[in-house]
Length: 113
Length: 112
Image 1 (cartoon, rainbow over the protein chains, first blue to last red):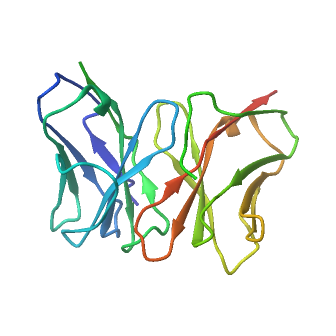
Image 2 (image 1 turned 180 degrees about the vertical axis):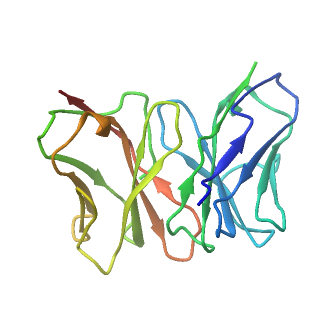
């Protein structure tokens, strides 16, 4: 069974730029959730995608957007990057929508300068 | 509750000891809870979950206890090993919402 994978591993961007992060869900999983983890803190929920539609969103501005594809892989897009967007971005996949048994990938470390 | 702060509480144990990591949650409407282990530079690793209709659930070397009266969750690790050294997070969910809300992590240090 293939686990959750994310790309790229690390990324450095300049304030104001846009970034796209990618996630491949675990085999058999149709739901992807994205989280932001600032240094020294627990992950914060951004949004969840189920069968290609957004299925719940946390307290993040609209410049954070996402997509899910028919193969259940997903992208997180962040526009107009700010310094505070520097964080570890995690995706988690699960067998169904909701919070249950979410399995995380290794994350993408984004640094905004 | 929400995770805050850069200075994590730390639990230091000797190899072979039993470890107990505690978590207080604030939302009385939460009905699903998960424990995750996060090693440096890696994503959180699922350990065990429990629903609010249970008080206790056991896995391999781990036990989760849920006390809804005082809104308290604990993770017990039996015969702790150096490989158990990591930051441990509890996460909660309120029925009807998709998100997991992560608590303040606890750093577990296991010395040989």
